[in-house]
Amino acid sequence: MAQGFDHLLDATITHLEALKAEGARSVSFSNESVQILREMLQERRERAEPAQSNRPFAQKPIARETVSRKESSVATDAGKAQAADLVGRVADWPVLNAEEKLTAMRDLASRAGACTKCSHLVKSRSQVVFGVGSLDAEIMYVGEAPGLDEDRQGEPFVGKAGQLLTKIIQTMGLSREKVYIANVLKCRPDTPGQTYGNRKPTPLEMQTCWPYLLEQIKCIRPKVIVALGSTAVEGLLGKKTVGITRLRGKFDDFRGIPLMPTYHPSYVLRNPANRIKRQIWEDMLSVMRLLNHPVTSQQENYFTS
Image (cartoon, rainbow, N blue to C red; front, side):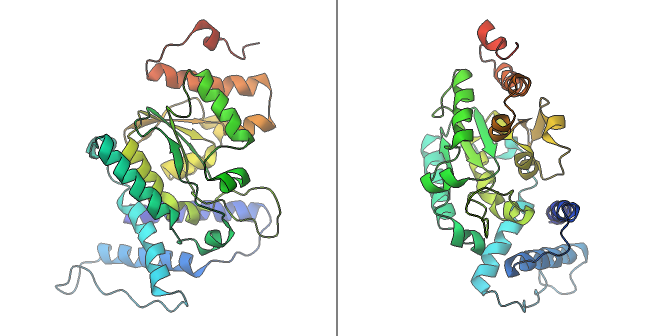
């Protein structure tokens, strides 16, 4: 729990520092967010200090916020789930057969679809965008959050950035049906006062939604994870990023699974120079080689001129 609390605190500080750099002088927190922090801190203290009674856990103080007990419990469970799951690598996870995978993923999708942990996103979303692809995929692509098109269609990466991702996957000799595609956040981040555009998920939003992504990864057990953009890297690895341009091209580790950070397709759309296209393609070539997928001379030389 201490490690999970430190992870959440570090992510929150990073977000607040970014807001300060942008000129923000104050921020507001939802009751759910305050409750998550309070109860995680309380449990951390309980674990740090020996219990003074025979009970395994001391009684927690009653929250004074006007949040319903049900909402508070659901939001807190998400934070606790991520903290508890920070330990454990792929070798420790159970291996599921095809039927077990299908059952587990259907149950997870059902729970995610009914999720009301982030009340502000429940009000703004059209639907939960869970994930799509093969449950036996060798490669899992993870982005940051759904956009407008994804929110409308209920499938990740279907807008312009998604169309580019599909082309990249096809150029690798694969298809969307052969890989798995998901996001760190399953709901489109709300944009109050805006009729268009997207925003980056907050650390607390990613923390709350984390158990769903982790269970997807555990169920699929991909051989490689491709993190699309610095937000996806932050959400997966739970640490500050130094910028995707410095992270990309080098494999990191997600609990024993190689993780390749690379540009988000939307970045490539905004920066269509061959140099950028070549960099993201070099990252995909590295993934293909790691999996011992054949690489043709034509594939090898894409975007070299």
